[in-house]
Image (cartoon, rainbow, N blue to C red; front, side):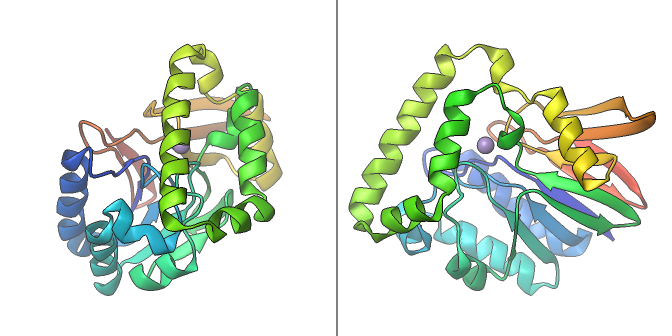
Length: 238
Ligand code: MN
């Protein structure tokens, strides 16, 4: 059986094509997969598990639930857009939440999984915001505000980040190689899979004299991007 990795679907009612692709994927998953790992930014943004209807993501939750109910193990690791996905979401959909980063063992391989934004160390602005928003103090305070207000705050932040992206040089929005190497070394692995940068690729390099591989998932704006692990072999399908 095959293990699949996906990320950066950025689902939103504004981009119905991506949601349709995910629903079609959900229908075929039970026959093909033993496990599915979602590596963050499944949603364009998330304002708390009680906001699923407000955000129009009921159908996506049903799709994940149907995959999990069929016997496929579904794992979810947070992205920078959907870091507020919590225990209620996990209960409703039947997925297991994973910390970022995490090392998994599948098909005889030890693989380091991360969303990837923590590797973009040159984007100081993002790293500062990340530190602030991942603090439990910020999360608790945000989740206590009324739903409507959270919705507006998230929308404003999203527009701000779109604008900032246009003015930032391309290089700072990619991962920093030394950060990649440090994270792999810290976890004693030579394979890493991440998303976030929307630059799908399979990179090979030498880490402490050994072959190391970094697989990057793409977004789902135009087409699916999936990494499959089958019989010990990892394949990127853009
Ligand atoms: Mn991201």
